[in-house]
Length: 222
Ligand SMILES: C[S@@+](CC[C@H](N)C(=O)[O-])C[C@H]1O[C@@H](n2cnc3c(N)ncnc32)[C@H](O)[C@@H]1O
Image (cartoon, rainbow, N blue to C red; front, side, top):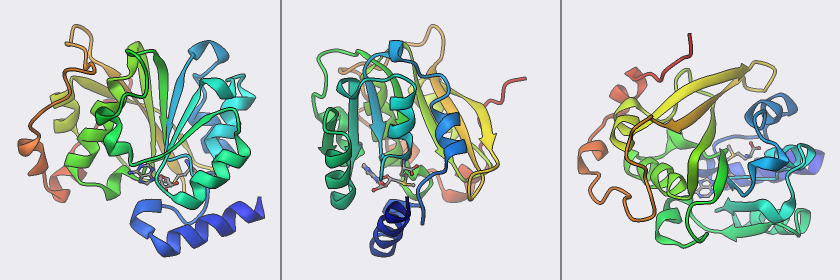
């Protein structure tokens, strides 16, 4: 929608680092990041939905609006999402605060879909977001993240620290710019991140430099 491009561009002009893109994601990327989702996935958490490019695709896949919680920090996007998805729960909040809120009773979420610009965030913030999201994910649940970068935007030391692994789902070469989707899951046998076990001290990871982040890779399936 032309209106969405204008909303995005205006938001990007005001806060380029936070918005992280000059235009909403295209259909190829929306299809790829939601590929594994069905109505049976159950409650879903979407982080950084923007104008709702992935949200519309989730609805097409049979997800009910009542099963959607949308976390958006941009106030204009938040108001637009409230109008577009009146049955969804739309929260105006920083995704880094997930762990300090009580969004659900327990950990019922089947999947997290994230459009957040993680490469623009500090390691500390990435840890807060990912560990907070996993605290709501049920066993077997997955966190889907897209990136314009060449590697997984959650660097290896953070994955190790949180007991997670990342696999490349695929690349959406038709997206402008081309993007990749990664799927983060808990490592087998690893103690589950729960509402009570989010890391208290992330000082070691906060020291990871941008250079080191770029050199770390994620698991790519054989
Ligand atoms: C790259 S855009 C992606 C938007 C949409 N998912 C898409 O693909 O078209 C990033 C979105 O994340 C939101 N965002 C950035 N930082 C955030 C944060 N800390 N908490 C919640 N939303 C955030 C921005 O406002 C923006 O809507």
